[in-house]
Length: 435
Ligand code: UGA
Image (cartoon, rainbow, N blue to C red; front, side):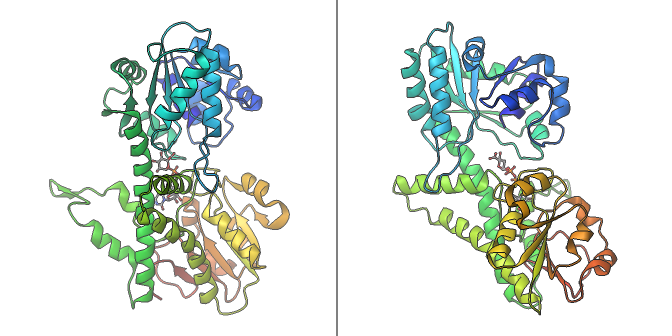
């Protein structure tokens, strides 16, 4: 997120300095190489390299900048949000600002629980720097990028949310985003901005869990396909308005779909952090805990569905897709990875395939699973094949190819309705359909 913001702002003509304490990453960025996989980002980095500096010297970088974005990770530590990286960054910025001149604006971009910008970052920076609110402004500017789509999401944002502490900070940030003349800007206070980010992510996660609970009911009925149920729901004109006789399908429709649950570096940690925060302020958040519960158990549900549908003993499974979603090499909280772990815990061998995430998968599993470069090779000796990531390339595999390569009595479990357009096959099961 930090790098996308840096490259994206540089692309609108701003001079940007990237700070990271990992010297390897800095060297890569200087050479125009990406430390991660993100479509289109490397090209944009190379195009804007003249405007982008990268350094581990935070002091000089902070001195030279008018606006400092904090984009460090805010993981969930099992009990609550872990703000240690954020506090460390605030401290470093504060120290650097001790001998600096001129007005500076500190912007929190990391996803943080409500109150963090004003009650955690601001006091640390002011204390360390010895400066006052007249010399340093604070803001919270959440990001709404999706991995795999980050460049497009940055270049064509649907909204810019600026949680600011003064008119001066607002004007500074409007100038930072001056390249986005067509985008609606929501000006608010930092705590509201923090809450907008959490509410947005938990709303999307809630939709996924809602779909999965409904799908589980559909599976128990006779001749009911949850896809059809959701289609009927989405036809409500309050969800998909009809304009000039044409129905507008909303983006949220793709989240309202039976599946294997959500993963990635954002939804799981953010919903857990909001739930923990809500408990800490004595709000009994049943919906948040419920949606997390459905997500946790959906994985087991999918696994058990496979075991039940397969008639014999299951010795090996194949996971088609270890990335948490297509177009990323990110395997954090990936359902494919978690399903593989579940199988290993049950003494079932695992074969895996992915188009981009295989190196990260190797780092994760070592020699505990078998790796394949071709999906059809990965399925040959398995009893159950789980399709866990909707890589478009899997769509190119025909049913004849599957039939030729699947072992006798093997089944395929489509955990993401990836093959919903195809005709029924006795060896294929789809989550969310009664059969
Ligand atoms: C998510 C949000 O969508 C972004 O708006 C937000 O900025 C980001 O978190 C963040 O907080 O940084 P991301 O995790 O990259 O972005 O990916 P999504 O595409 O939203 O996918 C999250 C999970 O939902 C994945 O497990 C994915 O498989 C699932 N999903 C996604 C669906 O089940 N259906 C979809 O149509 C899209």
